[in-house]
Image (cartoon, rainbow, N blue to C red; front, side):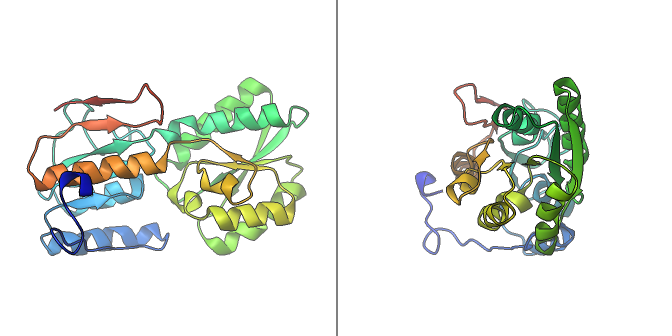
Amino acid sequence: MAQSGYAEGSTVVIDYRWAEGQYSRLRALATDLANRQVTAIVAAGGAEVALAAKSATATIPIVFEMGGDPIALGVVDSLSRPGGNLTGVSSLSVEVSRKRLEFMREVLPSTKVFAVAINPTSPTSDSQLKNLRAASDSLGLSLVVLKASAEQEFDSMFAAVHEMGAGGLVFSSDPYFAYRSQQLAALAAHHAVPAMTQSRDFPLAGGLMSYGGDFNQSHRHAGIYAGRILKARSLPICQYSGSPRSSCSSI
């Protein structure tokens, strides 16, 4: 937003809301912001936040930031003509969950059973699990599905990896996991579980490896879009994948 000429506390006021990982609270938080008649809503926490914001208002401009396909999730009608009051950025990291399983197989070629971590409260959990099962079938692997949607479930999830005979743990793309990289890396080390997430913060904290979009770049794009909204400019939807193939389609 600074690039667009806005500075918090000086030329713009930012009113924050945080659901603390509880997706069930998102709609109420989004409705509260909509009732305050804010100029714009930045839904920068994944598909869950974007869908909550969309349900709260059909008039206030919304900038989403997510890893899933905004069309498949019903956030927009199309990339070239999104329609409604939403625009935003997608890293498409949800679509590459299967690549994490493939990379884990390369690192552990003798392993035939892997565990996958799914947040059952996420709107992308079913599609990700479907992609992971397809990848495991093509690789001749077996999957153990572990579900967690609260921090107190993490320790038992890592313990279950060995108990179920899995050789490694692959995390699906989900903001709840991505923003808890230090905790997950510590548990992976404690339980001696090779694990892989979408966030670069995970290996930086001591985890094995990661594969996914660049959060810094997607945050930056979302901030630029918010600044443009404040200047009442027309916006595109940008698909950011962290590669030179990223593209934007104008409205």
